[in-house]
Length: 269
Image (tube, rainbow, N blue to C red):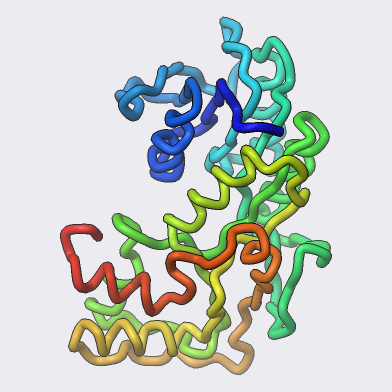
């Protein structure tokens, strides 16, 4: 796969908005969205709701990035992807499907989870994610990316929790990825000749939630949020070595760099 000349962004949230300018440097970009909102500069917007059969054909593209929200019901992704395939004149040479580490649920595990571990989802959300991954592979031969805990400018949920002093489960195992590094990952996977079929997008520092909120509290100069406490803290630890072998050094290798920057420049968050 060379750098795509025509790319369709399916779903047009923050990730797609940040990805579009990188792709526009090398080719044409279309963005499929349900709303009439203006697409990013230089991007051709297409209004469509993939919950329904599309009335018109989509343009021919050689690459596609799918960042759709899960939707209602376990089969929501499969329905949307089927409608998408029916509206395309041909299957793109490269499709990247953005899922989530949320395909893993249950009591959690401290052992690092790698791309070789098979999830056994139990909740409706995790089953829907897993079925979406399978549908993306079956229909589009997609490369699947599973980000964990996306944060960055405009994604300041944890900062707000700490400022409010809201209690959290300090021992819970957590993972995250800065939005900048996730966007870099998606752009790379669009043009890598032989990408891995599945990548866990996580940074170098999985950490107990108490460690993360403690750092944030010190940076903000506020009290550390109280601990809810739990006999079984839960959560997973993900091994991000495959991502780093592809991407090289992360711009935000741990939560410290990312949250420190967001706190230092409040206008960015």
